[in-house]
Length: 170
Image (cartoon, rainbow, N blue to C red; front, side, top):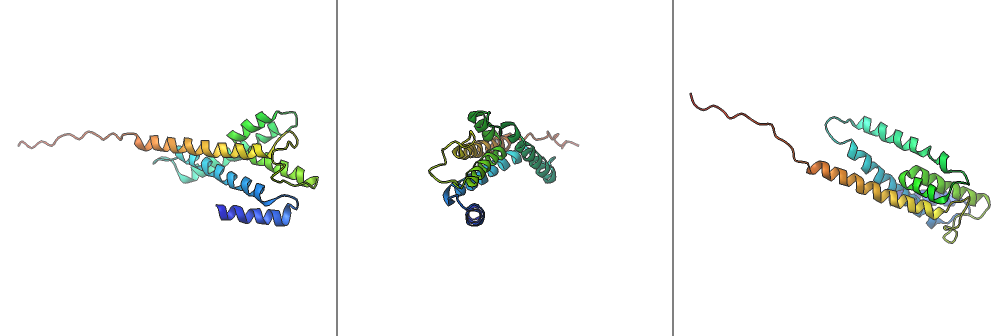
């Protein structure tokens, strides 16, 4: 995952984002990947068992992620407080990454770019650092919840069917 993050960051900072520094963008892509890994751990814990098919799990997980990214429409306005955007971003990684990309786009538009010094500055009532915090929190929370559900499912004692004793007397 780190190799992909480095490659994507190098391509973006070298070809697309002329004013953005490498390190903040690398941090964003890395924590976004970790957050998605946690999301997958959480979702797969619900679809383990003999009755669940991998195709159903993939479709439902993708639909939930896709539909949750539309929650960004509720928080993208300037008048929405930053703490609301942060809470929604903690629950839905798609919202956090969209807010971070909007911040980077705004900074690129005014030819500032994202740097280590302006990561904590408010841009359109949102800080880039808030996205990083939200993605770290969601990655840790999703991983913890998913692994806990999985361990509880594995530790559940299996009941055996009672077998009638064989009649040995003739």
